[in-house]
Each structure stands twice: as C-alpha cells, then as structure tokens.
Length: 251
Ligand code: SF4
Image (cartoon, rainbow, N blue to C red; front, top):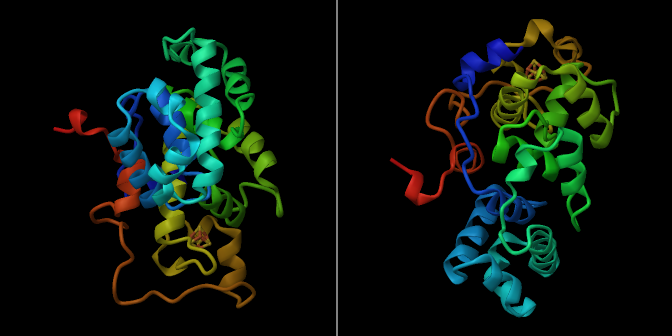
C-alpha cells in the first residue's frame, strides 16, 4: 500500500524540521479543529504581531484572541498557547530550546508533550514527527478513515487506540510516508463520506471496496474533472502542512 500510494503522492520523505519546535507546537495548537488554511493565517498573524515568544506570553489574552481569530476557536486557543508557552519557558529556563525532545527516549518525549495543557497524543506526534523526524504517528481524521476502510484497523477502533495499533504495525521509517500518504489519499480519493474508488490504486487490497462494489457501502463516481492534488500541484492546505517552510527557508 505504501509503495503504491508513494508512487501517486511522490514518495514523501521527512527532509528536516519545517519550523523550530516551539513554532511547531504553537502551529499545531492553532490547527486543532480548524482547516489548515485558517490555522496558517492565524500563525502568520501571530508571528507578524509578536517578535518573540516572551511577547506572546506577556500579551493580554484578549489581544492574543483577536490576533489569532482567523484560526477559529481563538478564545480557547489563546489561553492554551500562553499556558503551553509558560510551561516551555519554565522547563527550558527561558531558553525556548526543546531539542531534548529529539534526544530523550521516544515515550518520555511524548509524555512530556502530552503533559502540556491541551496537548493530546495526535498533537504530540505531530511535533515529534515533523519537528524531529521521530517515529511517532499522528492519526487525524483522514488517516483514521482510510486505515479503517483498508482494514488496517478493526472496525470502530477509536482514535486513541488507532494511534497505538498503527504505530506498532509500522516500521520507524514508514511513519512519515504513511501519515502523509494517507492524508493526501483521504483528501483526494478516499474522501468522506464517499470514496472515489475508481481513482484508487488499492482496490484489490481494500475490504471497503469489496463491499462497495457489491452495493453494500457508498462510493462516489469518477467525475470528469480530476480531484485536486492527485498528481498535479499540491493543494494549498497540503502545501501548508506537508511542505510549508518559513519564508527564509524557501528557495
Ligand atoms: S478502494 Fe476506495 S475505500 Fe478503499 S482505499 Fe481506495 S478509495 Fe478508499
């Protein structure tokens, strides 16, 4: 499956951190329950308004709410960001250096992140995988849905258990491509609520398709227009989460 999806989605590989770890943590909080485009706007606004993390930490919370409002759920996220920054500040004695997360044993690093206010297993895995290239698997709604349809998880497996089962099943070097490929596949082809199985390279492996082809599960027809991002330019939000780098790192 990885090989076939890799052919379609360009064999994604981790090419180093896209952001410093504190930025990764803040961006990930902003992206909770929000479209990537909106969280990116909020992150950009935050970085434009404040020159440093101490400034974000010291800002009146009401002001921070207004700055990150484009990201949605700002009244929840602003105090969460400040609480997390306060913990990071204290833990690093003001250095903001989270490089220890790349050095500690994986479970210790994961637990440190999960112990931060408002940080769950998925957010912790995003920081570890994208920020440090560590073998932690974030399971978002796309990864969860596609893995269930493909029979990689028992039916009705919840997100928490899905993290554990999929991480245990994958080799460390497979975590990043698996995460990126399943997200892209979930957005482009294996969509909710109806997958476009006619565009999928995995039909012969897929229990959902076996049902859908007998009329026992919904499936969308292949339309004339190609879905965005199948083999063309990445869509905007794909680029944000999986290819975005701060301006100074762009070619
Ligand atoms: S065959 Fe259909 S349900 Fe199965 S992975 Fe492909 S798009 Fe999803």
